[in-house]
Length: 434
Image (cartoon, rainbow, N blue to C red; front, side, top):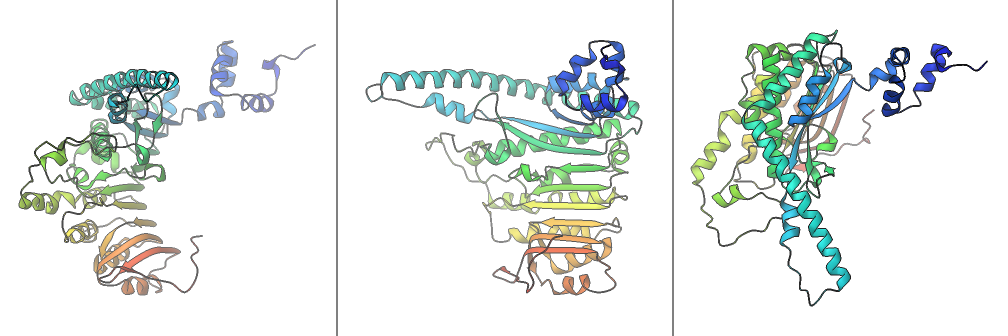
């Protein structure tokens, strides 16, 4: 007598379905209610524990439906929210390209026409997507939709929380199908704006839903090179909001990439997309802004208080990672003196969380601020990459880290710079991060 699939022992049945993809599993579940029940195993549920959601009306709507009571979307533990950049500059450049019909063959002319026809189609799609997103964001609908999904998770998941929440940005630029990372996504201006929009939408949805989260990753991932949150965007948040404070009360791990504030020096600079494919009009007037207005924006307190405010409401924090992204176009020679204030504000807080692990990358610091922050957090594992000492030396930190009172379990330093010429410190022994 032939054996039916339903008659297989649970262990063998589980081994079989592990060989199937998600679409095949869906098809199998449609065969009968018994198979659907038997297929709802830990392996099948694992497909729903991690989810990437674009900040678009369709994706957010589907996310709400997936997190309804009794739906498998309630199993979500790790959520990635993705800001979408619809960068049309390269497609516009293709369409505006001039060709001499006398210099190209019939075959070349045909390929050009096909390329331009495809570019026109993709351009219309990206423009439509961007229009829809602007309507979604300006109306606040993105916040209300995300808030509803968050409330579903809080109400329906057994734990009533997210183990991790990550923010990312992707770019459409070459065409309407290919998603690329920010590093090759053209205009940094569009990327930074998308990062800011995604961050504020997420924070307001957390405040409205009070959804607890354990780990928060704010654009700090190796795949997100050339994408950060401008420091004033973080500083403008009211972290004392009751709902937001509830969301962050259980936060154990924080990872954030911050950049200096986006400051434009002229009207033309502000109007540009800063995309390599953009055609610049040299005839446009380039009205320079008053230097005092620029300095006021650079030195504004909102630029430097964000990290301190966030740490203040994260009393349960155990791991802290911060990356600092600096725009290459420095506005004056005192810029480093402003950047060091990020850590200074954190070091001067009345109370700091007791941290097990700290990772700092790309920061400008003062000797006393760095030493104070490390000592007061009682860190056990310290990692520092490309740290620039704007005043003082690393000697006091080295002395502390090698003392008995520090009780450090692991430390790793790579690319430490000090003195007026920012010369790199060299160590006698080879690096070993393990």
